[in-house]
Length: 522
Image 1 (cartoon, rainbow, N blue to C red):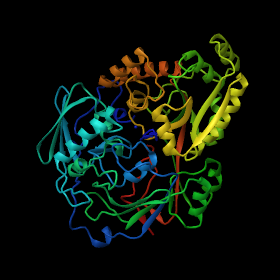
Image 2 (image 1 turned 90 degrees about the vertical axis):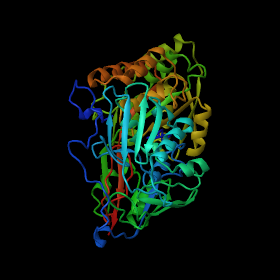
Image 3 (image 1 turned 60 degrees about the vertical axis):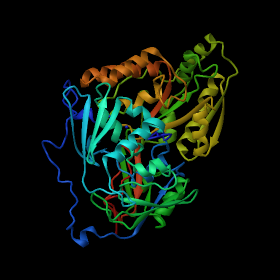
Image 4 (image 1 turned 120 degrees about the horizontal axis):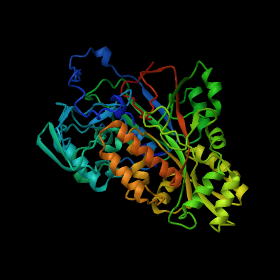
């Protein structure tokens, strides 16, 4: 759910280019040039305006697998780390890139040299100043050992000519570079000293609105306010992220005042909660998608016709309704219809006869599928139950294996599955939806899918700067990914969160970023 991440990052991003007029080249210039933003820290802010107060108790559905921003792929980890770390740029309210640690940037005419100017006066939580050397060290570490190294594939070299300037030399044009380096906290900027010492996993140190205090696995993660934060806020004393896997318990705890904010809402309770004056419901169309993946390195799933048979056997409308009620939209191609990059293509639909024909032609019978899900994302368990019922109609037995998410991630990484159901969160650019998951060299291609035509299309789309031409390439790639059932896509869910009326200054975002910098209590 990738991250997003899959979650697994879910570890976990497609709206930057939509800000351009159709058919025009993608605009990668400094967005602050025509409308400069006064983003300096005002040291004379009125004490009442800057006052902090109270600890926000935030309920999350599972444990972070770790707190190293460069190596985790867990959505629960990113919910916490969103408030600890910053990136060079970040998605704004409309998901287009805006300044963060970089106050401005410019590009060369050939789009192969990018120069970023950092904010002056920013400090890490340990008091050390942010410098260009920290940025370079962070990106070099991500490129060498990070879960999202693929996002930096266009960058050949980094340079820090002075403390506030970072220069990136590219090997190809990258119209989505800003999304790649700033769309989520897997691209966090950390102190070079902590990177060298190898301590980020034990003691996260960022420049964000809140600083790390403690992590008690199975219980909570505690953050405290960063009084030297460069942006607006924080207006809280701290955040107590409490691990509560059961969604109904989270809602009850919110209603009784034991928690102030919850990261998800059971869709079956939407009608009830929408009429509850004691709860504020955050509900927006999201860029997430949920899917089924079959292990291409195991027989008979190495045969695309068998994967297609399984796709024909499934009714994604029923799966969507069971998992999300009316809080999701069925979609066979991942990218939601709210995006410029949406591709209206649905070649399957449930056809049990066609599914049986394909299985018979492939010589497959008495098939048993080990389907891996996690109860920390309950929709995967619900989906699995429907999948099991539907596949039984073509003689396929499904054994549902429910694991805690940390174990799920480990088994996914080792290829210990016939199939798994999960989702990806925080997607923005179309590259986020397809490249890492379906390119033969993709870092999150755990199903082992490989197709030369898909590789060529995804490689070409990465360097295409004309928006319409780029979309055509992604449409072609998506069609082939769907036709070959690399993933069997189910739906795009709405993002559902809830909080107490005492909580102000917080908004639910389509990229699932959880930002509490400007949040207040009372």
